[in-house]
Figure 1 (cartoon, rainbow, N blue to C red):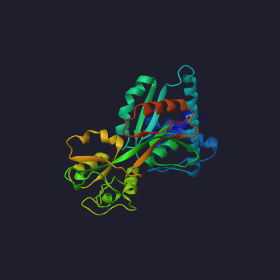
Figure 2: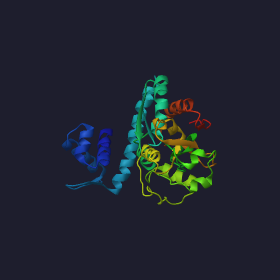
Figure 3: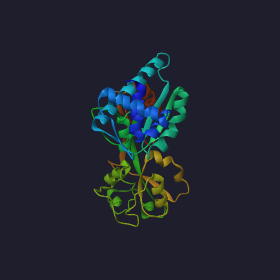
Figure 4: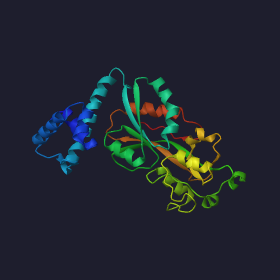
Length: 309
């Protein structure tokens, strides 16, 4: 057994295809298939069930693949430790973030991060919470930035900041002339929501005091994939939505027909955190990333006390 064979196994598991896995690993398909077959014979188990149309991972294969990911991470850590002897903040750092956060947070920190840590290469992924956590546990990501509380023994969650919600409503709306927006006002609005799977949709429902998705209004069955889509609909007069504070700095604030109002309600915010595995060895790199985030947050959010990693 060697690390190369484990990389072949993980490539097949991720692509569900021997040919595509071979392309990813820059080897021929017979070479990759042969090495995996030899590994299965060595271990005395079947990792993949092969048919002409599909590749399925066996139950024992799932366990082996999980351990293989850990071994490859530790092998990578050995390389990183060796590099860290001369420079502890060099190499790639794979960070995943929410699509309702990444477009607004990352532009604030990319240049400062490159300036302060020029050898640290930030690799960004943008997906919903469930997918990010799956990639994190699968050792495909080093850390994720999410807005969902967790209580998982294998993960460490470091709160970064509280991000207030603003209400976005059309310019020609009765609330435009109202000094303060109350919880009762929210109950009378047509709420536009992102698709299920976006934590912002659930958080918006909680702020509005809803247990189920609203079905009233022209857009009651809407399942938008992006915050930008919701804001365009708001500007066209189809309803209202909640906007995280960092997004208020976006280009849509100019001549879009949308008015953004901060909600002075006790539950109208989300807590944004960095989450990583207990076993992740490069905590100093994560600490550097957190320091840059903390130093470049705008005053529209509330930074939280730093935590030792």
